Length: 309
Image (cartoon, rainbow, N blue to C red; front, side, top):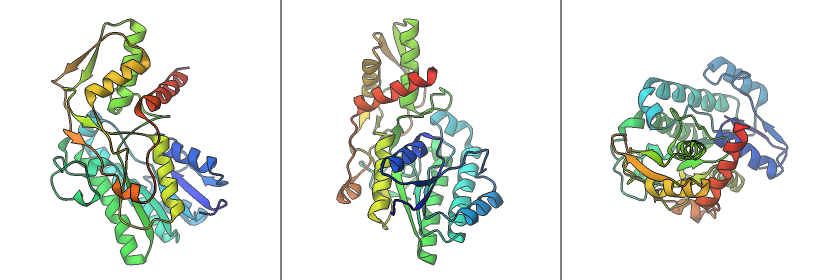
């Protein structure tokens, strides 16, 4: 990528989009284009097409999506399916119509079947039933992958898809009704520490295993793939290692300095038993994650405290 290339980052105010913008700026890219939701409603097809026709970016990163944890995914099923389908369809089609050759679509590890073999290889896509709690979100993301593949096949575009594992980092969502497990644990542990609680209740049994990637590492991988001119099939982005939710909670309380006991509420859903990414394709392309979990949690906690003011 030329340092003066025009690069549009959709979803720049979110955790992933803001990390990509930071990475691009650190690398010396001088023409990064962003639009807030007020400036450009990605659900408005005409507005998106008009924006793309006017701007004609050289590269696009699609990090815009309606996202949330298990509860939000399960409750707002229609919104998660509809809004994500519309956002990605508007952006990908408008990019094509504007003649944009290079685009990166960011998906999610939830695209893989609930009981797929571990670790999750890219080839496992569409080989079995999805996890029911986040099926609408997963289906929308799968549609985005297939839309990119279709434009590549039919029109010779270079629209690539990457599948991040569970993410955390700066600008994360700490709303307990909509957040993912790690930011929720950070907030719960912080509040329990402030109150002087002797116990911290964690949703689920604590036995599911999850992989966690610091969002700035994801951004580094995304920019790396674009700079390398990667033009192949979808790529998993993760660390290749995982921990149990119990181990995660223990790490969070240690980093935050909460001295109480952990308790697990098995009446709450666990979700998929295990979700570990096979990152051998990414490693073969020359990239590996750098930020260790305790280090990343400490950085995320500092950001959380800064947001509290």
